[in-house]
Image (cartoon, rainbow, N blue to C red; front, top):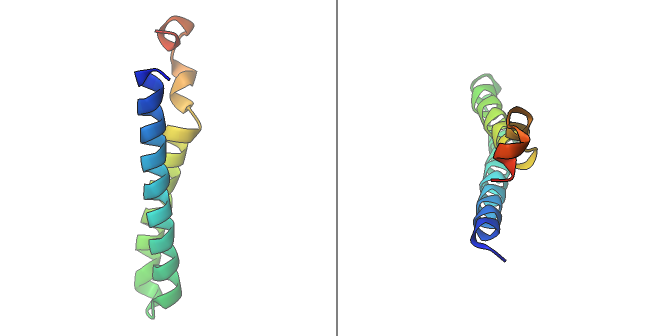
Length: 73
């Protein structure tokens, strides 16, 4: 396996771990928080952060704006 693929798998695994940690934190925050009027903002922030990582790293959206020449370089 070449170096570029190893790096891509390493980044993907790191993002999966970050998403797992954020999901666990989101679950704990949502389950054990007593004051609901204060908790919604961090929950929304975590959800937006998770969506950003999923779109950026797993949906390959940046390929929409790259040409064929740039993609195979």
